[in-house]
Length: 153
Image (tube, rainbow, N blue to C red; front, top):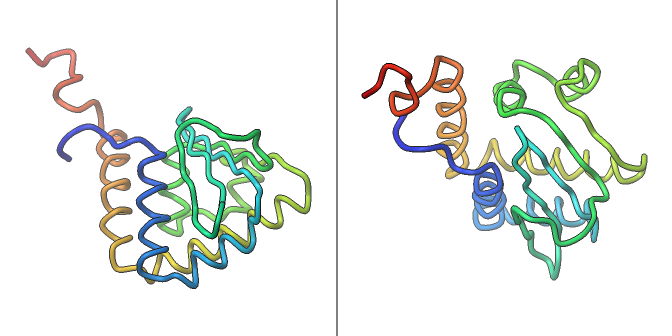
């Protein structure tokens, strides 16, 4: 693995933009499901605030609006979900993913998430984006990078 990890917000922005460019139907489904809802994705303390406006996704690392839906999890859990090693339901039931919001808003978030995932597995540029995220997490799980090693010097 080379270089520092990109922020989670940057990674989400790249994924959402890839879908909008390569598979507009997936992006449109996400937007239709979410409407004006503000979604806050908090992964290992990093925020990606997502909302649709004027037919396009906005992803920021600082919120514009209070969250309608909040998801809290870890990068490790995101990798397990992306790799199919875990399901969203199992992750929620086990506390690896925490979702907060009104029932209707959570249902809308789920529909948007499914549209995102259906597009992500078909978007050519999403695979390298996910590979980068996955590689960073696996390297982190293996131990600190050399520049952070206490023996480095």
